[in-house]
Structure formats: structure tokens, C-alpha cells
Image (cartoon, rainbow, N blue to C red; front, side, top):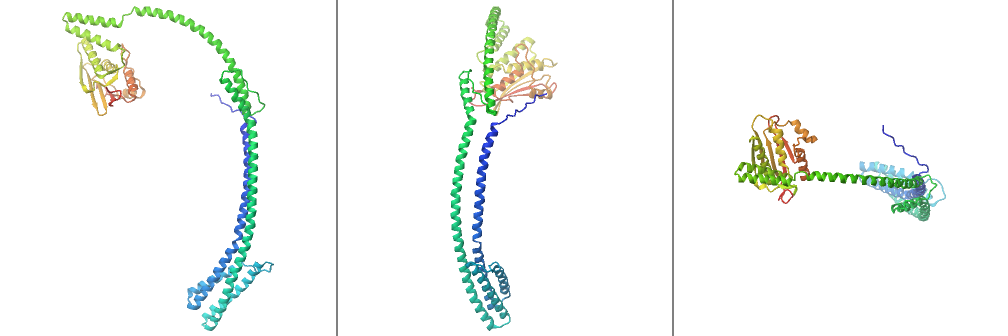
Length: 499
């Protein structure tokens, strides 16, 4: 079972204190802004209501004009549509008149509204009578009524205009007073916000300074510890918040650190004594190994011996023996030469030629070796010991256990932006499952006896050298169909792969 980590609850948390301080400041700002917002909304509403009466008078005047217009048109044309519009406008005008004052009050504008309303009803009666006289074909009567109604219309139009101006002047005076009040309130709000903002800054600075003073002490002691003064100590604080916990823990950590350093000093001293003994033993062991190595055969002694045998065979005119000994000497010299890890393809192909020749001399020429080389690619650089391990793998695991003649093919050609090196055999083949396992799990265990360099090693070196995970392809049609190992190298002018 995994050990559950419990979260420690710290009383009087620093975050709670900061949250409380900032929350109080924010709440006060919100309250002040709400008060200002409500007052501004109230004043805006009052301004809107103030000029509603002027809009009503404008609409009343428009309706009055429409009643007069359609009455006149009907008296002239006696058109049914015009009569309909007259009744609609007269009804609208009458509904607007009902909004006017009809009570007795001590206010000039209200008195004017009452008189206007009474005369407007008289006007509507005259227009209705004129319409009825027109419909009754009483020409003289409707003309007299039209003239009387027109006089009332002119009077009402002037009265509405005068009343509208009087109300507008009264509203303007009220608006000026209200605007002055709003300016005073705006100034007062600014002073309150400025005062409260200054108080908030002072209070927050006091609280933050109180909270951060222990942190400053902690930072100072941390600098001293960084300079190597491990005897430094932070003054203890009585707070129960995170700063108090950190201060207590830091002092405890310094104490533990001093104790651990003392323990490490004793441990290092003991380890140095042990290492000194080990070095003495290692020196004796190296001396013994040196004496052992001096007794071994020097590789150059082996090359010189093989060359001496080749010269002796040549002197005795044993050409085949000379060629064989000379080839073996070149083969071993190439393998052990440490001058460079990168060689040309020409050197690698020559290495394969020597290797096949040596094996055919040993085993009576049972291996058929065919190569098709594009000589323009022989200067291409490649990691050393790339081709020979693959050839050896094909011989050992491919054609050594078949009842027919073994055959090895080596092809070198260019395919677009790739240089292809194909090594194939006609041996026992490889299943698709085995190839998939090699690709997926990298379980390449076909190592070569003797030098320990296997197919896995070759593939790994090629992938690292060219930084490509798809540098090698393994192809086989199945059992007894042989195996092809194809190396696909990038052909880039001027890069490390080209001369």
C-alpha cells in the first residue's frame, strides 16, 4: 500500500490574513461604488422624467395638426379614407388630452393645462359638427364651423407651444440645480475614494510590512548560509502562520545540516583510509598484470611473423602460400588497427574480399562470392567493421548448414538519394515473425564468435552514426529462401558520408 500524504493545516494562515485584509478593502470599495451608482441612476431617472412632459406636449401638438389637416381634407374632398384618418387622429388627440391636468391647483402651468384641455374639447366638438354638416350637405354651416374650428386650432397651437416652452424653462431650471448637485456629489465621491484609497494603501503597507519582516530575516540568513556561515540563525517568531513554520523549519534544517556535515567528515576520513588501502592493492595487482602482459605475444610480432612467412613462401616460389599468408596478415592488421573508426567503402569491400578468400582456402572453396560494385561510390565513408560481420553472420547462420552450394552476393549501387549496400545469401532464410521481433524488440542475438561483433552491434553503430532508426532493412521470403540485409545510406554532397 502506498503511504498517504496528509496535508498539514496551519492555523492563522498567512494566506487567510492577506485574503481578509484585501477582502475588507475590496468590500469597502464595492460599497462606495454601489452608493455612487445608485445615486447616479436616481439622478438620471429624474432627468429622464423631467423632460417627459415636453415630449408629451410635442406629441399633442402633432396630433392637433393631424386632426386639423384631415378635417380640412375631408371638407374639401369628402373622401372616405380621409374621414377614417380624421376619426383615428381625433381619438388619439382626445386620449392625449386626458393626460392633461383638470384639477384646480395653485400652479400657472397646471392652470394653463386645464384651460388648454377645456378649449381642446370645444375644438373637437366644432370639428365633429363640421364633419356632420359636410356629410348632411349643409354647405353654409360646415364653412362657418370650419372657420370657428380653425380659430380654436390656431389658439390651441399657440397655447401648446407657449405651455411647452414654459414647462421646458421650468425643467431647465430644475436640471441646472440637479447638475450642480451632481457636481458636488461627484467631487465628494472623488474625495471619499481618494481618502479611502490612501487609507487602504497605509493599512496594507502596515500589514504587509508586518508579514514580510520575518521573510527579510529569512533571506538574510539564507545569504549567510550560502556564504558558508552555517552557525547563522533566524530570530524565532511567535506567529502560527506559514512564515513561523518556515522559520522554525529553517532553524531545524540548519541544525541537522551541521550534524550531517560532522558525520560526513568522519565518513570521508574513513573512506579515504579505505581507498588508500585499495589503491595499494590495485598497484600490486597492476604490477602483476603488467608482468603478465609482457609475457603475451605482441600483435606487431604476429604481423611481422606472418610477413616473414609470406616472404619465405615467395622465396620458395610457393605463390598460393604467399598469397594466403599475406591475406591473413592484412585481415588481422585491418581488424586491430585503431588509427580511425571511419573508413571508405573501398577498404570495407577489400576486407570482405580477404575474409571470403581466407574462408575458401580453409574450407576448400565451398563459398560462391559474387559482387557488383559501383566504383564511383567506393570513396563513401562508413563506420569500420560494418560489412564483414554481416558477411560472417550470413555464412555462419545462413549457408553453413545447407546441403547445396552456398552463395554470397554483395551489391553496391545508388538509388536516388540513397546508397544501397545489399548483402544476401541463399541459406536457411528467416521467418516474418523473426524479422518483426528483430525490428520491434531489437532481440538480435546472432553474435559472431571470436571478435564479439554481431549484427545488433553493426545496426546500433550505423543508427548512431547516421542518426536514423531505419538505416537497415532485413528481407526474407521464408524458410530456405535466404536472407538479404540492406544498408540504406544517405547520399548528401558535402556531408560526412561523402568524401
